[in-house]
Image (cartoon, rainbow, N blue to C red):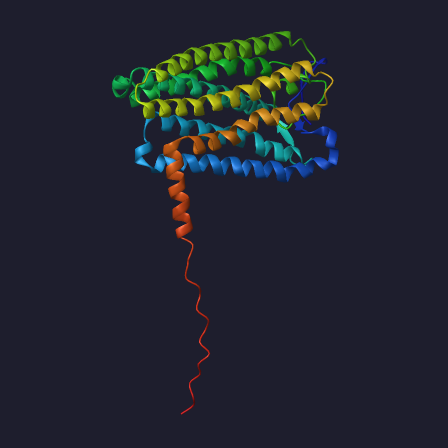
Length: 334
């Protein structure tokens, strides 16, 4: 452990021990295989859909590029969380410095907020595509798309940076053990020994304001989109528009439900064990990363067709010819 000293009374830990699922004690190492398996599935599934979008020129359109970006964020989020989680199961590799802890905290929350902001950009893209289909190519250009993604990243940074900056100013003197598998904000704040009312207020205010604003924007966008979709005269085009919106809405439901349910349970179930809270944190961090590629891969017709082609090609690469047995013929001596 490391202590930072400023005078005789101000002591603060500068390194910590991550202890995910502390109630399991030595048995928590058994969780390594399930979480590693989940991580590998997340990376493989997301990477497969991303590769399909990148490799197929017909999918180089704003909607599919945004889907690929969303899935790339999923890989980054899982990579930020799971390796640290696996290390927290071992007492030998579970140490983390305060600086690394704060960087991890920033990355986790930045990627969560950035994920939600990409969903907002996707909603805007679908709004223009369905409500103004003839002007869509001239409105949603590559330059506009890059600007919107840049604005989403800047908004995510502005939302997360104050929370992490306030956390960096707190003194941590109660313990050097974080009872969590990652540097989650409230798990770290439990180790503080000063007044953290400002941290709690800012964190809760930012979360509520961000969630409410996002839900209002998404609700307004998709209500207009669905209303415009039902007015499309062509049944085939109407069905395609509603199916695409259904995929996006399903992803939105998964992301926001997992995040909000974790926050609600964290604040209401005070008597629940730390392991339960940690499991809920893993649930809301990893579930969207696991389900998003399945939703877009199964429900988006163009991606599904190209994935089917990839699987068929892979099956055809399996050699169909059996190896011939070695010849038993011998030449007679002359």
